[in-house]
Length: 128
Image (cartoon, rainbow, N blue to C red):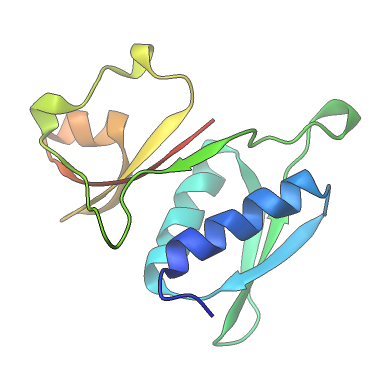
């Protein structure tokens, strides 16, 4: 079991895509559920269900010829080195291929939405 549940959960999703699995089970937490909801809104995963209090079942999305919807992910903020962005420092969405997810005082947001709301926060990761 990992002390960094978000990182562990995202790596399990990445490994599930690499292994061409239809679904994966990941550890449950409020932060993980919020990030999964944003990934679902952006179309990177099909759905997720909270089976019990410990695990979440995530259904992975594939395109034609079983091409993964999520090709790459990069964890930016880690327990030993947190990365924060002011809203002025957020790059334009035209410069970014994929999405970046921030943890803000308004909840989990993409950088595009955070820039519209003029709010900064902790940069959790980049998803392509």
